[in-house]
Each structure stands twice: as C-alpha cells, then as structure tokens.
Length: 452
Ligand code: TRP
Image (cartoon, rainbow, N blue to C red; front, side, top):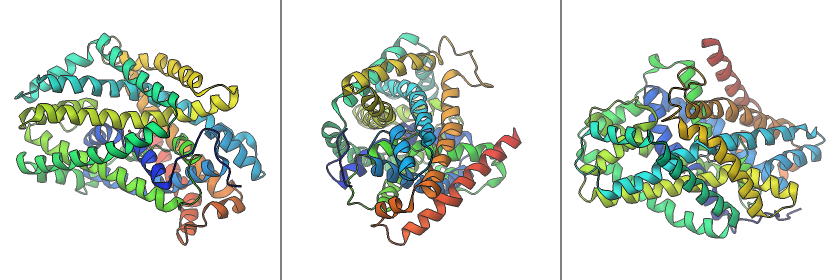
C-alpha cells in the first residue's frame, strides 16, 4: 500500500512540515492579514479569524492531507481515486477542478503583489525611504503601482522565478531553501516586533487594536472575510495541501503535523500585526488603508531605524522568498495534473501553467494603473475582485466539499489506516470535519448573503 508518488517525495516528516509551512506562510500573513484586519476594525475580526483557524482550518487541512497521502496523485485524480476506492461517484473530482481554477486565479494576483515586494527590495536598498515622512512613503507607493510597465516587469520576473523552481521539482532545492529562510524570517519579525514595542510609543494601542473584543462593529461580511483569510493563510480549499500531502511519508501523525503548521502560520500573522499597527498609530496613518498598508508602514519604519536601509532590504527579500514558497504550492496541483494527464515532463507542464497565469495576471497588473477605474464588483478592481471571489467564496466552498468528503464519503478503512498515529484526536477531528466545519462555513455564507 505504501507506494510513492510519481512526482517525488519529501525526504522526511520535517521536510513536509517545512514545505507546507512554506506554502502557508506568505503574503497572506505579512501583507494581507494586517490590512484585512485593519479594514474590518481589528479585535473582533482577529478573534473570529483565530476561531476559524482552529475549528475549520485545522480539520480541513487534515482532510486534505489524508486524501492526498492516500491517493498520491494530483488533487483532481486524488479525489477521483479516493472516491472510487470508497465506492462513491468519481464526480468528486470536480472539487479538484475547482481547486485548479482557484489556484490560477489566486496566483494571478498573488504574483502581482509579490512583484511589488521585489521592487521594494531595490527601493529600500537604494535608500529612498531613509528619514522619510508617512505622506511621502504613501506617494512613493502610489507612484510605483501607478506605473504599468514597472509593475508588469516585476510581476513577470516573480512568475518566471516561480515557474523555474516548480519546473525543477519541489524537493531538493526548495526543501533546503525553506529550511534556512523560514527561521531567518521569523527572527527578523521578532526583531521588528521589539523595535515597534520599544520605539513606536504606540505598541499598546496596536495590541489593543488587534485583541480587543469589540463585537459591535462586526458584520457578517467581516466574519466572512475572517473565514476567507483563515482559508487563504493556511493554503486551504483548493488542493495545495492535498498535493503536498501526496508526497508526505506515512510515518507521521496527520493531526499533530497540521496543528504545528497552523500554529506557526498564526504566529507569523499575529507578529506582523504587532509590527504594523503600532507603526500605523505612531505615524497617524489609516489602519484601514487597504492593500498598500504594508508597503507604506514598513518602509517608513525602516527609514527611521539605524541600519534600516540594509535591514529593510533584507526583510523584503525574505518576504519575497516566503511568497515564492507559497506560489509554487499554488500551481503544484495544476502541474501535477498536467504531468499525469499529458504524460509530459514537469518543465512543459510548468511552462504551460505559467503562461496561462501570466495572461490572467495582466488584469491585476492593470488594476492599479490603466484599469484603476474599472470595477468588476462594486468598488472592486480586477485585482480586488479576484482576491474577494477566491478567498471568500471559492476556497470556503472547496473546503466544505473536502471536509464532507473526508468526513462522510471516504471509506473508514482508508481513514483508519491513515490516522493510526493520531490517537484520540482522530474522533475529535472526525466530529469537526463532519459537522462543525461544514456547518460553520454554511452558516457564515448564508448570513453574509442575507445581509447584503
Ligand atoms: N497561504 C499563502 C499565504 O498566506 C498563500 C497560498 C499558497 C494559498 N497556497 C495557497 C492560498 C493555496 C490559498 C490556497 O500567503
């Protein structure tokens, strides 16, 4: 039964943890979490987000790993195989298809933001932010994203890096990179938290903003946003973790592993908030500034720090690496499926996927310049719309199906054999996957719809 995947295998449980955390920790933690929390009023939003991580996120992550590890195939074929081995309809593979589409949509805007990060590596390195005011930092950001050619160039570079790494296979190069980069990123974040705590003079205000229980401001729409953020940050609902699970060794407990990944990811997100919000308040910036938040506050802070020019440059390099290790997980389901389907090489598959993502990404490239007046849904640019639809609708929907599939459809023989190392967590997971996670997602959807 314990065959290997044709796409390769992680060399150990630790490597799976690193790869999956590499997928989870990314722009979602450092860029998206602070600004979405800011737009939704902080405190109560963060509490809901944390509840979603534990009650919905971890059970769904476990479901994805179990399905992937059992079938050892791309998510589309993994769903089909797991279904037919459980005497269920192969139509379940539609969930895999939905995931592949979601992956394209997410990477198409993710790579644009990651391109902004790349450009900031050089902008910080050049010293333009040294000693600058909050207002000028905002001007520089707007000037940059307003320039279509620059944004296009950085987006293309980032996507090319992603495709090249994916083409070479995920295990050797990537495993090594993640092993060193994640700890450095963590360390720099701690230094930045301390910096914010000591120098901003507004640290408690930041803490208060992130953790105060003010439920009055909370709408069902912000609950939906919190849930979407939980899916996004853990890379759930589209098969990324399922694809990685397919390369995971059998001798590791699924629930313990998933919990570790979730805790690490949550730690990074909260730390980013504790860096950004004290700086926002100290410089009288808007906490609800939206996607530009990180690109304005962090350069501002670095500009005032001793050695901030180098330090800031290094920090953005690490954010870029975190983005790369996430981006490769976004296209892995599509690449693995193409390899299985066309019996083609990884290189060809990666190239095909890359070109498709690039074309779709043009919409997001244009969103901050030539198409900045084009709104798809109310007030939302192309980029915002891609982000909204994937995170708040497609990922949670995919998550419901995955949880229901693992909890109700997957044969208990398969489940038992995958979960032998999980002890009494196994029934707890089963309860959460069967009842709590699907019901919670459904309720949030329904209430958010009613409200609009
Ligand atoms: N989790 C990553 C982040 O926070 C983004 C990501 C990678 C992702 N793979 C995913 C999001 C799959 C949703 C689904 O930056």
